[in-house]
Length: 314
Image (cartoon, rainbow, N blue to C red; front, side):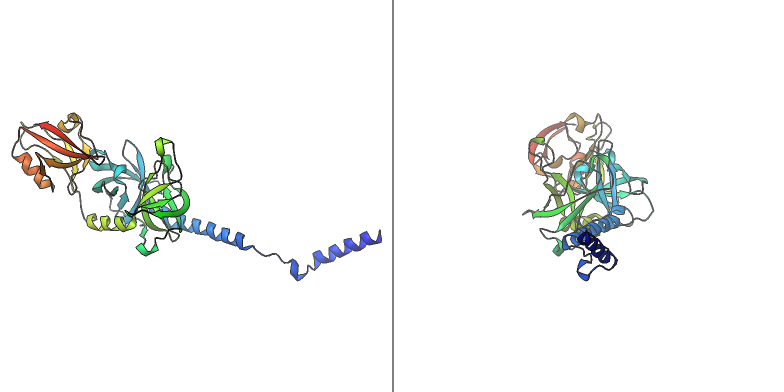
């Protein structure tokens, strides 16, 4: 009984005056977890106001504001098939704007949209190329399945020979066009695709176009007002071709309903390559041919990395 009292009293003394060796310390693992958590919070706070949701009427995707005047970087496949290159854009604050596609690059799956407003916007910072390293933590923000402002995390798993970035950060439909960010909240890539063999869903492997390519694309096209134009035959007796084109690449951005192009099965994403075997290097080449009022022609188009010849009777 005396022993029990002694032990109880000793315990009380320790509670009142705990020895130095009993002081609480934070484990390195817990400290690292807290640091990683804070990094995620900081990245989201910095970058999320610059991420938008883009709606085309046929679907939606994401984008990043890259200039204070409302220039948005996204994927070409996000804006493919829009009517006249017009889209609806929602910001993180919930405000909606009308945007106009001003440039598209199907090869690298990039597009630029300009908002029709005089307002000023927060912008995402573009990472320097040397800050892209396999193994670094990465963050994706976008609108998967329409859930705007969704953050996912992972690592940069691989840099492909063509420069594409591979990541295990969760990407889903709607993330397309949104930013892949580093731990400083800087854009290192534009999310564009996932590996899904046989359409069996997300395998945990996603891809983004590198900021190295995106930066050049922005600089080459940021001053354009609207490079798209509708190619039409010159006289009222000649039926319209009825397509909206990117003036630089001759990629079809839109097809008018019940037009000649629609009857031929042309569709957004097709690229006009040649007429009667003569290569189309620029929009003026196409316009010059149409100005000659041809009765028919063989149009060569590129579709899904394949060539097809289509006979056109004007």
